[in-house]
Length: 208
Image 1 (tube, one colour):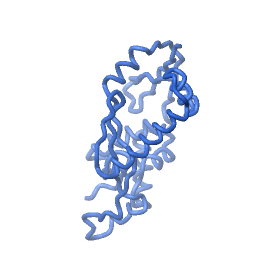
Image 2 (cartoon, helix red, strand yellow):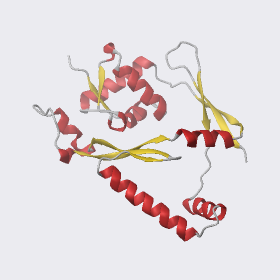
Image 3 (tube, helix red, strand yellow):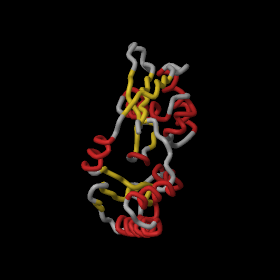
C-alpha cells in the first residue's frame, strides 16, 4: 500500500524572495482496535492477549518513567519523562526574590521518545511513497516589524507570551510562529527573550 507525501511551501517572511519547502507524510488514522486486531491476526494470537500485554507495558512504562528511569524497548525506542513548570506557577517566576522553584511547582508535562534505529530502518524499507499534493502557506498580511510590535504590545500588558498567543496576534501557523519566536529571542534588538525549554518555553520582555 502506498503512503502519500505532501510538499509544504512556506512563503518568505522576510522579503528575501526565497520560498522554504519541506515534505510531510499525509497521515491516515488507524484506531487502537484496528491495530490490536491486525497484531492478533498476523501473530496468530487472541486479541485479549495483545490487549493484556499492551496494557501491562503501558502501566509499567509509566511506573519506570515516574521513578526517573529511561526505558529502552528494543526495536521500538527509548522513553523518558519530561518535566516542566506548572502553567499556574509561571507567574511566580516573575516575583521578586524567586530564583528557584520547589517540587510542587514542577510536574511531568510529556514523554520524550527517541525511535530505535531498527524501527526507522524497517519503516523506511517498507514505505512506498507517492505524491499527495502541495500545501502552500501564504505570506502573512503583517510585516515582520508589525508582528514584533504586536508581540511587544502584548508583553507590555501581560507578564509572558506563549506560541499560541503569537499565533493569534500574527495569523502565522503554529510551526512558523514558533520558529519566528525562537529567532526573535536570539536577536538582541527585538526586545524579546525566552525562558524555559521546549513545551514549557515562554517569552518575556528583555531586561534593560
